[in-house]
Image 1 (cartoon, helix red, strand yellow):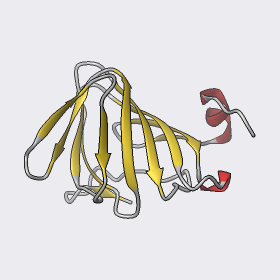
Image 2 (cartoon, rainbow, N blue to C red):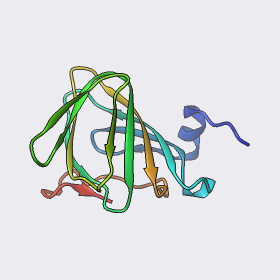
Image 3 (cartoon, helix red, strand yellow):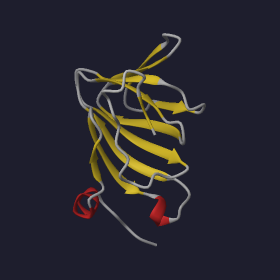
Length: 127
């Protein structure tokens, strides 16, 4: 058993600036749990085209507001208590609203911990 908090992650170098916010990588591959847990912040007013080709992701909103849009144009508002799931390696737009969007993000298989997005890629960032 172990306990870890955001400050521990910051000291370990696993606070990642991912382009439109931050991701505290609370649980990574080295923890041998089979999944990753992140405390993710999407900055207000940002838009990112993302895809996880090697991971499935579920995100639970714990604060703020934003939206996620699929490639068919369907837009889903995200507020506290909402869960969105990228269960087919979905390309999507993630947008911060008028307030920072704060998510609990779960990845399977786990992240190594240092992955970062390339938001300058016209096809979207993928890892």
